[in-house]
Length: 160
Ligand SMILES: CCCCCCCCCCCCCCCC(=O)SCCNC(=O)CCNC(=O)[C@H](O)C(C)(C)COP(=O)(O)OP(=O)(O)OC[C@H]1O[C@@H](n2cnc3c(N)ncnc32)[C@H](O)[C@@H]1OP(=O)(O)O
Image 1 (tube, rainbow, N blue to C red):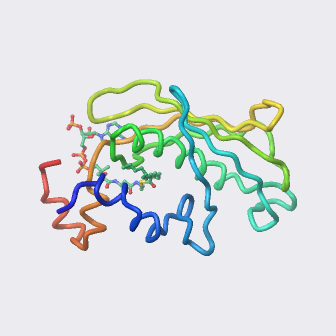
Image 2 (cartoon, protein in one colour; image 1 turned 90 degrees about the horizontal axis):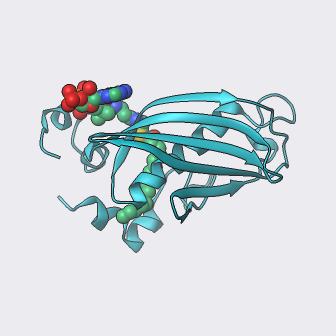
């Protein structure tokens, strides 16, 4: 089986990437790009009406999705293929439709197989609007599932 670097690092994958958040070729996706600087990863996003929950307010689930993604990219881009196992989210202020936001993530602690991450969403003037802490597990299980194996056979796989 190819390594995750071979799959996810290749141009071919960039084309095939159907990730709802970062896939450039997902027609209904958010199509964000995550950047990395020092010990943080970040992205920017401006919600449109299609990202609403309450009228004129960005859906909170999408704020969580963005934080999950940027925390995930922090780890992937630093050599750890991971899956999210836990997330806690605090919504501080509503984000209005059309209001640009910045999503930033960093690692709090690396404890072997589990990475403890934190993320924050701010408005462009720096006002915090949401925060998250999360745990990610280092695993290539998602890749095994992607390669067409069943969940049951992936569960039998112990070497990672
Ligand atoms: C080349 C670079 C390209 C870069 C460009 C690519 C970019 C690409 C970016 C993608 C960014 C994605 C961002 C979205 C990320 C998702 O959306 S991931 C999808 C959502 N998450 C999932 O689907 C996970 C579902 N859960 C599972 O599949 C399984 O539960 C898991 C996580 C694989 C764990 O399975 P398992 O290994 O059988 O679990 P288990 O034996 O119970 O636990 C293993 C160990 O972890 C511990 N553990 C498990 N859960 C927890 C927990 N919640 N807390 C603490 N410990 C825990 C256990 O205690 C155990 O510890 P030990 O006993 O070994 O000491």
